[in-house]
Amino acid sequence: MANPTVILASGSKARQEMLRNAGVSFDVIPADIDEEKILSEMVSNNKNVEDIANKLAEEKSLKVSKEKKDNYIIGSDQILSLNNKLYSKAKNKNEAKEKLLELSSKTHQLTSAVCVTKNNKIIWSSFSQAQLSLKDLTEEKIDNYLERAGDDIYNCVGCYALESIGIQLFDKIEGDYFTILGMPLLPLLTFLEKEGVLA
Picture 1 (cartoon, one colour):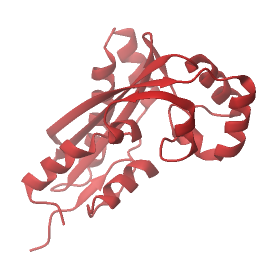
Picture 2 (cartoon, rainbow, N blue to C red):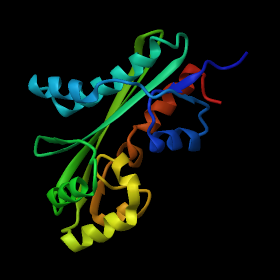
Picture 3 (tube, helix red, strand yellow):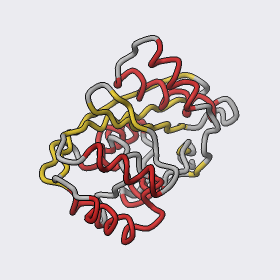
């Protein structure tokens, strides 16, 4: 008997690569949700970062689960915060530079949440946090980095990819590597194994 289908409700290359490298068989159906609206509503209701990340992960998973019954739908999201300010992905090089200047010589937090739904019900969720300290970055160093990093930085909320040259920007990192990449992978794999859906 074939295993139930696992579906990742995200277009994130990093999350897809994590699952693929871990040997998980899955399909990809990016969830079309209004992230900005959800974020705005939760911030105005004074929700904390963990609640916001969890809510976004849940909404993504539930959106796809409505259409794909009997499948395991993975939703995941990540929030970058510094001193209670939440950051979105940069849309262009100027925004990326501005963000990196703000984060320079400070310690920010990444909160990653993951959720699994089946038959439009949440059956499991988890979240994890990491602390990342950037070096004291000059404008020249940032310009040089952005030139070398290319367009991939616009897929990362912090404008860095630790798995490539973005690692050069940091003094110190505390937390789970996969959480930093965008999804708490180890607890997810443990859950999928218990469910008997790992290949």
